[in-house]
Image (cartoon, rainbow, N blue to C red; front, top):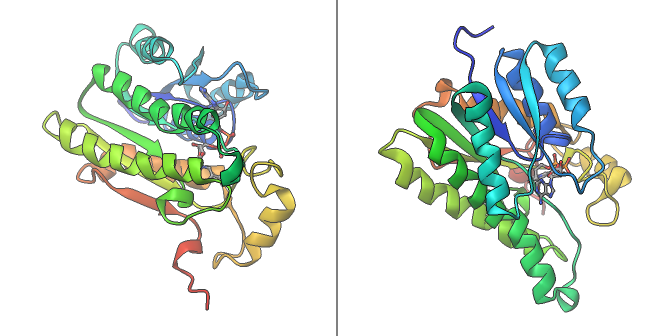
Length: 255
Ligand code: NAD
């Protein structure tokens, strides 16, 4: 166990990559505020159980990244519970399928409110409580972060926007020695990608995995450990950077 436990807030930590990250921090003996979105079916108690099993401490806190007061209360919870905040991880996201002719202003706004403005709200609230040496990570995607994705223009635009946000906040918060980076996951098996309507589903993941140089799609824990690296002092001179975690998917040339 680390001698100096770090305190983190993670949005969307009742499932997928967020849950895996809470467990990753727990294995280091850290303390986490598990952000859970009540509108979703994911069970935050399962994250809490895994955290305790791994040797960490956590509390569950309901947060909706569409609401500034809700996100501000979420960041405050870390201070109230553990007396400090070291790592802020803007992980929450939604994915929706929308061909251009169905991409209404409402659907565009709904997507950006969660996947881009929600990231701003989270990093902004985290920055209030973060001291020198703290760090933040936002989750982008190869959709938008690297590629275009048909019928997902709003998602890709939000995820591309995350990179500009991260670079700018890295510059702005650098003088306080707070680092801000992005992780760009490739295809990772989580509830989001397993959704066959809005994403590619189990069969699509299986098919896509065969074309990935590593031979399969990624696991949530394989993204979590990279977020863990970026927030840690092992990466203390890295800021404003996007880091792709994709098993080689984006470097493979397709003729
Ligand atoms: P996931 O669906 O398990 O996790 C997303 C989480 O966000 C859920 O727990 C959900 O409850 C939460 N959430 C949704 N709306 C919210 C809101 N308004 N307020 C607070 N929380 C909200 O899927 P995941 O794959 O673990 O997603 C984590 C992040 O990784 C997302 O930003 C996603 O876009 C990104 N990502 C995933 C993949 C992939 O292949 N799985 C690839 C690239 C990027």
